[in-house]
Length: 298
Image (cartoon, rainbow, N blue to C red; front, side, top):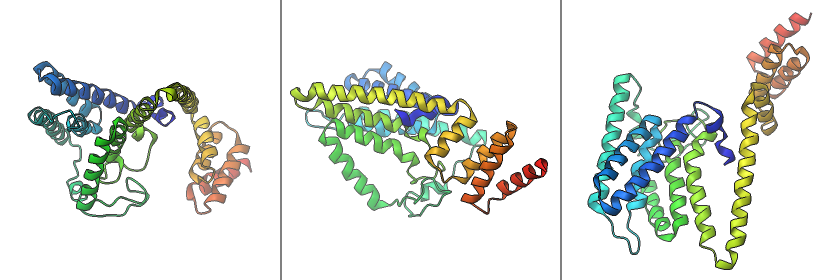
């Protein structure tokens, strides 16, 4: 999908694709274990859980994703013992992961646990602008929504997948700052599941049209992803395309001024410094760089 361009363009974003791969593999192994209870499937689930956590902390979502598979539905009993065994395995991996972070010196904010039950409002420095209010009422509402969506259809499962995948970035626990394209990578799998299930649940006479729409959407997504990835080829291209999308960003205008200055294009560098100052007259860095540029020209 086009929103996943950071994952393919940035090396730092590859952790999300690796984590998603191991989460999907772990879900398949969990499904196999819930179906036949064989130990090799459990061992593979343990490996996938550990690899997902070591790839990215979003690997902690494996247990709730497995709950989507294990929760009973009409004609499918709840394998309580097998599910809790899977939860114990992935929970043990999570504890080992936190311990490894601790001995490595990484911060584990204990205050984050309190924010699960204490409302707070966000700012530009918080995980999501506008914040998120968490509490027992929110938990109960989420639980009711979970049950309704799970019993609705496979499309409901896809929507639940999206809900779970957005939890680490929703502001409930302040793990991440700001919003980035790569945070939607795992959630987009739930969107794809929901879309495909809606198409295949349509009447037979509409199936051809639905498949055509799906093919067009997939082709458009591939084209948009390719064009977006090409924007990351160099900083000038990236800042220029980003400024077209957000023309009121004084930071992007300033960054372009810096890059054109490095490219010895004084005229365009001055143009973008002045544009940055028009957008934010108090921007000190733009003032200093513009003054230095004008001094050199004089």
